[in-house]
Image (cartoon, rainbow, N blue to C red; front, side, top):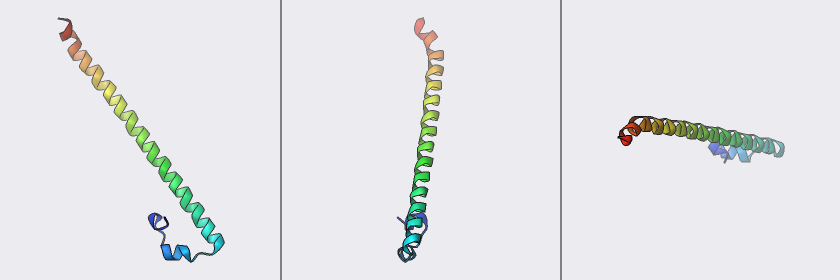
Length: 70
């Protein structure tokens, strides 16, 4: 886990107990922030996709509905 966040795993294991706790808190907080960022990105993309889909459906109906009524 430490190496994922750019920490040297050997140096990480050599930390004093208090430093080790602090590093674990920092790594956990960074993982939480990364997760929030990813969730926000997915929500943004889902919203954009839904908006574009609704727009495409509306455009298609506008073009094809008058043709269907004939």
